[in-house]
Structures are given as structure tokens and as C-alpha cells.
Length: 298
Image (cartoon, rainbow, N blue to C red; front, top):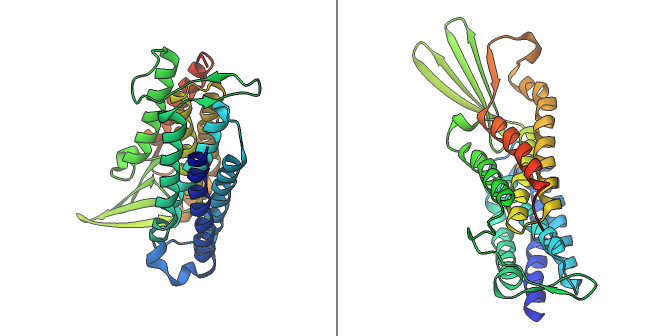
């Protein structure tokens, strides 16, 4: 019990530091651009960082005060700390390397105590059940394996978006005179513009907060699907698929406003545009995760 409490106290410490870092970004972020990744809107990102850190703090405190844990409750507590920790590495930049590793350390301790070393006391009836994470040694349940593979594909597509335009959320090509303009929406928060004129290529990046919101939603859905499929939590697998699909629909709704940042009116139907590979991967995998989630055996 003392080890469990210590692991949550580590999370509390990291979360409090995260709130402080978020406030620093909110208040003086424009003056310390290199420390926060030269963000375009540090005030908004500072607020997001503080809110995410508060979520992590709430999860850590709840875990510290709670005496008995169900499988789904442990999953919820872990996710409540993991997602803010990972997401804030993109919203803050170098400053997050202060609270981020502390939060990750607490999560490692919690995972070790709850899922690797020993069993967990389950429900209010006092029954004792055991469940372990054994890497890829899964139970053989086809539905869970399918959800696991789909969640990995979702996360992989976002990860690859950092390295290649092939895994974009959206692609646009416009020809104006002797210039060709290419646009890709990429993680975590920008539109990449490449202009080719008379054989000379130039590139610029346009930041957009709405893009970050979409990617955060997709990361939440993909991460939740991954963890809940590993722990065979049917309800959270279904919730994760719903989050992914909501993110995709929200992207379609926000897309006209996002493209206004480059002066493009999506309703003019100029140029060649298409939803990107990452969007379609999430659509297919999100639907499949939802369907197979109905058949996962807790």
C-alpha cells in the first residue's frame, strides 16, 4: 500500500509542477519562446497545459486517497495521468521536461505495482481478481487483438505524420500562374505549405490551434483504445472508438476555418484537395474498434 501511495505522490508532484509550468507559459510565454517551442499562441496553450495538469493532479490525488480499485478504475486513473503527460510535451516544449519525466516516473511505478508485480483488489464485494499486462502475450481473443492492432495503426499514423507528408490529415494542391502550392495538415498543430516556382521550392509552416485540438482528440482516442484493449475493458474500448470518430467529424466541421489561415475557401472548389491517409486510417480503425469492442470479453 505504501508503494502505491508513493507512486501517486510522485504523480501529484509532477502534476503540480505541470500547473506551474502552464501558468508560466500563459503569463510570460511570449518572452521565452525558445523554452516553449516558439508557439504562436502561448496564452491558449498555457491554459490547455494547466487544464491537462489539473486532470493529472485529480487522477493522482484520487488514486492516493482510494483504498480499493476496480480494473476500469485503475485504467481511468492511469489514462488520466498518461494523456496529459504525453500531450503536454507538444503544448509546452522544453519546459515540460521538468514535470514530464516526474509524471512518467510515477506512471512507471503505478504500472509496476498494479499490473506487473501483483494482483489488484477488485470490487466492493471484496472479491480478488488477477490481471497482468504481458506485452504481446494476449489472451487469444480475436476481438481484443483486432482492437489492439487498430489502435496501434492509429497512433502509428500520427507518429509518422511528424516525418512524412504521406500521413497528413488533409492535402491540397493549388496552381496559380507559374506557381504550384502544396498544403498538408500535419501534427501537431500546423499547415505545411510548399511553393514551387520556376523550379525553386520554398516552405513555410502556419500554426493553428484547431489542428492541435483535433490531434489531441485522436491521440486520446488511440491511446485509450490501446490501453483498454490490453486490459480487456469493453466499455473503454467502445468509448475510445467514439472519441476517434468524434475527432474525425469535428475535423470536417473545423476544416473550412482552418483553411482560412492560408486564404483558401473550401467552397470555391479550386485546386485538388483530399482528406489525408491519417484521416482514413482513423475512420476505418475507429469503426472496427467500435464493432469489435462489443465482443470483447471482460
